[in-house]
Image (tube, rainbow, N blue to C red; front, top):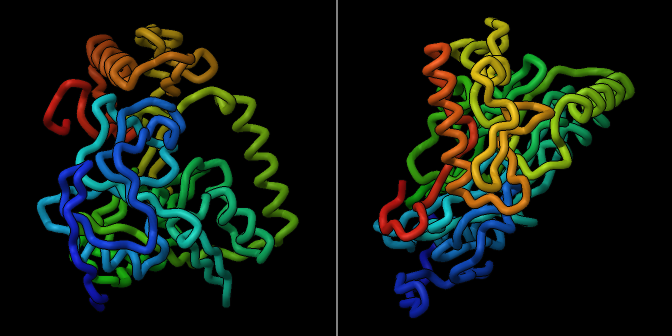
Length: 326
């Protein structure tokens, strides 16, 4: 469906033609405080829609030459120091509902993965793999997030998206081509909700499993440091579909260690000593420090072992004093 289009007005601060909204438009919003890494430049415009209808009307009216970037809680993201041109869309309270009915879990894109896992467990639905994954459901679907041998692809039934043209549609999971840390969403589409059909389980047993997962995570990962989760994808350990039927033992942290890069530093960036696949802001890092250290790690691993590590952290925006997005 297409909702009514608001009139455009010329915003003098951004020099963009923007629609009227019921949500919030902020100009030059610093994005560093909205990411787990605490780095990055501003958004030219940040849009926080009031609800699905507000988002759909905004996208329908927004001129097509204005770029949009959907952003969650910034848990798996480096925003470059020059910021992001166009409109950054950040979903909030109007998009974080969680509902459970007939063994199916429906969650708004802004719902935190951990909250969904807990609420599902209380209802006897096993989505425990989400409990230790940072971020929101929108990001989890986009990246086909997974942990402990289970991926979003294993339980996802459908997603609701708002297209760049303002159309609201439901897409079955099989249309997304979910693979390891990958989905094939329509260009410019914004996920607003997802429906899952997880296996059933005893609530007490599911809660106990999540407690054990949290303890194991806190023991092995730098959960109190400024990181964005795993920096690089495992060179192996996934199937072509992103499901759990083809698992190997080659891990990114192992090849990073073998290259001698555990604890490596550049400016304020460090490859975490506790877990070397966690690129960390040690306190005063810039986005450039983090990205350049990551590239140095990739080079060292390739030179020493012939393995090309792929970034798992998304890097967006433009470098400082650069007029073009990278």
